[in-house]
Length: 188
Image (cartoon, rainbow, N blue to C red; front, side):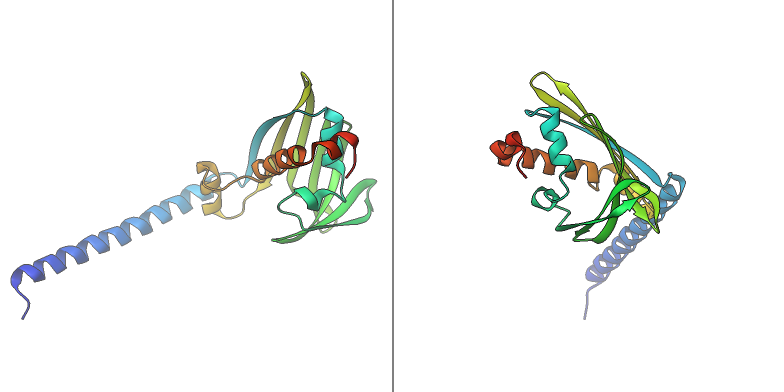
C-alpha cells in the first residue's frame, strides 16, 4: 500500500506537470497571436568585406553555371528563356526548385535577384550592393522574404531562424577564400 507521503508527492508532481504543459501551451498561443500581428514581409541586412575587387565578386555572383559549386542551397542550375528581357534560371536544391530572375543589374555595383511564381515577380528578393573598400570589396545584402507561418515570423525576429542572406554571405565568403587563383583570374 502507498503511504500518505508518497501520494502527496505524486499529486505535487502531477500538478507541476499540468502547470508546465499549460504554461507551454499558453506560451505557444501567445507567440501565435504575436505572429499574426507581425507583418508577413521581413527584411534582413548583412554585410561582409572581401579581399577581392568588386569585379571579381561580381563574376562569382553572376556566374550561373558556377553557383552549385559554392552555394550550399543549390545543387543544380538550369538556364531558362529570358522573361521580359531578364535573365532567368531554375535553381534546384534541397527544398525543391525555384525559378529565379536577375531583376536589376548594374555591374559591378548593384544586383537584384528575385523569385518568379506563376510567371510573375515574387519574394524572396536579394539585393547585393558592392563597393570598393580599400583593396577589397564591401558587400551589403538585403533579403526581403515573405513568412506565412505566424510562429516562423516570431522565430525570425528572435533570431532563432537563420536568414537566407546570412547563409549566402557565408557561402560567398567560402567561395572567395577557397580558390583564390581561380577567382582572381576569372575562371569558374
